[in-house]
Image 1 (cartoon, chains in turn orange, red, purple):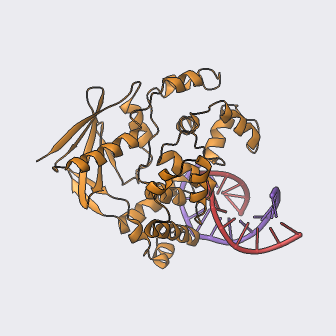
Image 2 (image 1 turned 180 degrees about the vertical axis):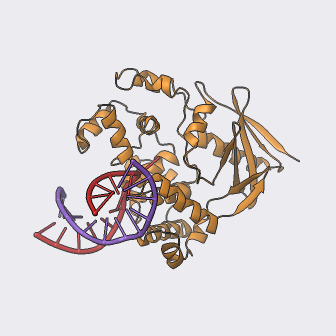
Length: 295
DNA sequence: GTCCAGGTCATCG
DNA sequence: CGATGACATGGA
């Protein structure tokens, strides 16, 4: 009793480039990549569903051993579309990049690369908090520990697949243990609890965010929670909601990339950064992602 | 040893 | 308001 379905993408698309974008760290445990296939598990409707994604016929094939209901399949399909931003047409973005001599190499270098999203809003926000002010290597170690302790796990086709913990679970996280044994700072733990609290109470959710139409109002709702600053708010809007205009201002990687490409001369020149992004209207998030990837 | 990482908040002056 | 220190640790 298996379910398999096909999701078309809008060319140009490169699954290979996306897999490169997906690979962040050997400590990544929310998915596994091997042999041009991605393995992951999701909770759909109280059911743990491990699945596999690979490229097939100008699209992605999604396969699982579980027989999914129509609603479950719809949810899984939306997740994958969101994860790889399958439906976006990148050609206008490439046309824009080619207008800037300093970015003209990117359409060739990263041809077909999509923003690799984090469709789960809670996961995206927690990840932004974990990653605050520490190097990514260490951030991945911290995330791995949190997921290993509090997330569900399932073995499938030779892969150990972990799920990001639920807000209800992280609300009860053991601050003393995570601080003393797992190297979390007290402030990170406090922020993770604040965010969990907001999700459990319903103060914050993907649906609630989507009901708000103004971009700035979405930022405001996010930053009203202690631990989510403007960087994290924009990061979440970019990675979880695929908002094209989200720019994680203040991001050191972004600043570094702009400096490397001689787009800014002074890393602290916020006006220059703002002015640069005004030339990328509608494609700000993609520009950021491509700049990160160029590092 | 120093400096900085995909920051944020509280507490100043 | 803008500036400054605390947070917690690893890697360069």
